[in-house]
Image 1 (tube, rainbow, N blue to C red):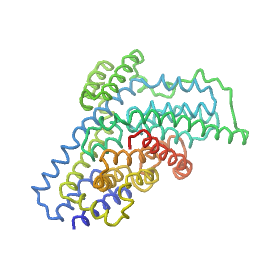
Image 2 (cartoon, rainbow, N blue to C red):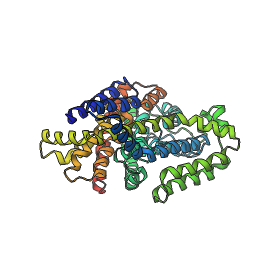
Image 3 (tube, helix red, strand yellow):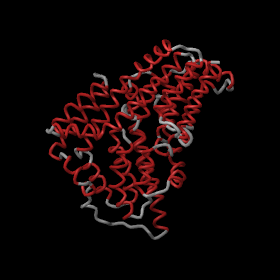
Image 4 (cartoon, rainbow, N blue to C red):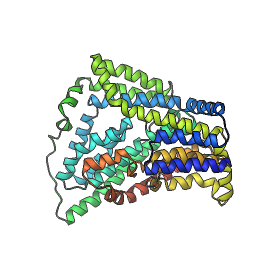
Amino acid sequence: MLSIIGLLVILTIVILLITQKLNPIVALVIIPFIGALVAGFGPGEITEFFNDGISSVISVVIMFIFAILFFGIMQDTGMFNPLINKMVKLSRGNVILVAMATVIIGAIAHLDGSGASTFLITIPALLPLYKKLNMSPYMLVMLIGMSASIMNMVPWGGPLGRTAAVLGVDSSELWQPLIPLQGVLIVLLIATAALIGSLEKKRLHKKDMLIEGINFDNFNLDQEIDAEAEALKRPKLLWFNLILTLAVVGLLMSGLLPAGLIFMLAVSIALPINYRNMNVQMDRIKAHAPSALMMAAIILAAGSFLGILENTGMLNSLAEDIVVILPAFLVPFLHYIIGFFGAPLELVLNTDAYYFALLPVVEQIVSAHGVDSITAAYSIMIGNVIGTFISPFSPALWLAVGLAGIEMGRYIKYAIFWVWGFSILAVIAAFIMGII
């Protein structure tokens, strides 16, 4: 009975999230609560389940709120703009170099872990360059999305934050073994971009659309910024902000302090030094609060969901029954199988459904066969994370499609081969490096 109720709870949530009939917060709170009542648990027991679930994710919530605020402030100051300008100028209008530079620019812009802000920064800046060279805007969105997906493995990124919430561990601890993998994947993606760029160059040459030799010395991202954004820039504090950001990343890698405290301190330092006026400080917090609070609310709702499913015994019961149904030889490798299909699963499951419905069940199943929980979670996450910005359920991708003036259906058709192929490459790299 517990398995049936647990399955119905998970399927209902997945269907509601896929069809976008309910906000993830509502679905993750209401459906498990009803499921627990149907299973015969009283208000007192459900309260204990809820408290256990919330306590397991509260550190992740704190980290998310202040990480998004910090990196939002750094973007307001214009810290990333000189780096982007330099990369564009170094490419000198060469199609292959532009493709390679796009990857690096995407990685830099996605340091805040927010897909929407990454696309808002990069696409308006790079689209004129792509148009000038007759390069495909579909390639622009795909390369930025793949680069951002690799960077999305940072602790304040959605996938790792969700994984940490499911496992009940600190996201900065999960991130540390992934840092070398991120470096390797960025290098591999630059090489992949060179290959894609060479194919694009051949296409343009074949259609007599190839343009080279343009002088890009005067390119300046600041030309794309409106007056309000210009007033927030702090070019004189560029080096201070860069050193502060590097110090934050260094502290996260060291594990000396909790991630939440690190970002609380960083925000407390960055705000008054960059913006002396208290009203301006409050405006900066208000500007970035919606994305910070939305992510925090989803994680809290997921904590409630997981607390109920785990403490009622639904997850354990479901995992045990699935093991009976699956062929015995496949069960110990289920995390690898899910990881292999992680990218295309983004086309049918949104991020919340993948991490909050699929991941806990698979982790429970393979853990019973001696697979470490973190290893299983890494396999599932690494295979999926590259496909983050190919999902039609991603609001950030719809923003990117709109900014680039392209069609969602054509984009998925254009990108699926490269994205899935690279996600498999990411899983192989993680396996070789001993992460999974």
